[in-house]
Image (cartoon, rainbow, N blue to C red; front, side, top):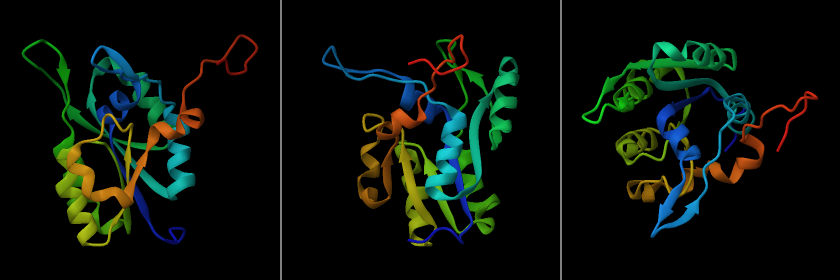
Length: 183
């Protein structure tokens, strides 16, 4: 499908993307997936080059101490949509963005784009995928890694891209003392 003349937006579940790339997956006490750190600047460029994404909405929980991070993300070209965070029973901070992502994709921004790229392996979005597919607006589903993919996404094989396969292009690497990137 030609996408060059279409208006394409990306809707990114920030927590799913971050945890899906960075978290190790262990099964039967064996490491089956080693996490890595995503370079969000490279990822924004990837979205633009691969899908011609004009606007990239990044849905994340808001924490005051992350203001510097938010400033950097905005400078890379993301539009940040914040969710108020709460503490769960164990005291862990949660910022569930699912409802905001669905609302922006299916209502608030719906008339402004031709095709959508959904970045999440979360099965809670399968109803959104069905809605977008039915209306001819689903371009792609970018899943952080195959171990973070919900079985509820099995009906969307033709739309899926597994981000882990792009690790070599998208991994964050610290700069060494000479200004270059280290491995």
